[in-house]
Image 1: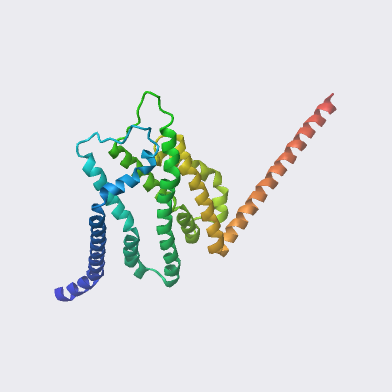
Image 2: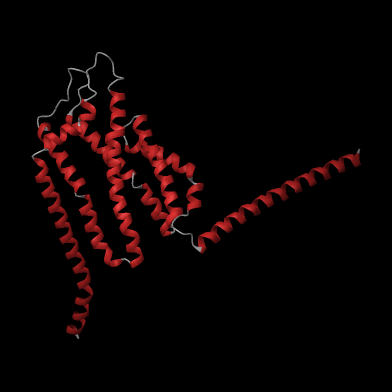
Length: 290
């Protein structure tokens, strides 16, 4: 009996072990590709940092430059930038490995829907980084380098600048995924197009709150992040209208909501009529007493 019971247990544990082995293998592939890109870019680490700091150094007053307040900053700042650049460059391969791991568990129609989403999410992530570098950075640095006191020389630390830039890169890269997230909400049935339209005012307020939390504490960075978030949310609604057809349940829910609103309006009208009739009866009773 013990031998017969051990065989089913092994059959049940085998699929989990297989998935774990596959996950470990794909993680190894990801680490190897990141390491390969990192080694290829490390020789150009200083050049990469020079290119990254161009939006700021081009606006610094004459006679000033960036500084390193820590002894290890001249080495670790370019090193950190190269590692992050390798991860960003390997993002298509990383997402491909994630897709290869989860694809066997999806239905055929889900695979057809997921492949365009995967490609567009990669494009939008890079678009967010490009928007931050070419649009946001010149505006932010142009403002901050021009509003300081005349007797203060702007000399930014290279590590502080790198942390500031990477934070904005990550924020804008994630924010530009909003159309995909909105489309997934509509496609999964967690939300409807009309429901998202009705909550537009709350979404706008939420965009500015997230912009305040994800960006440095200044109004310019917050606005430059919040406005694209709102526009990307609107584009996600448009994509939902185009690619997702409303189901019968959604149409029935919208019809029920509309009927409930109409019933509420009728009840309000009836209450108003009852109040008028009551006031008129009170007046008539007073007149009869007089």
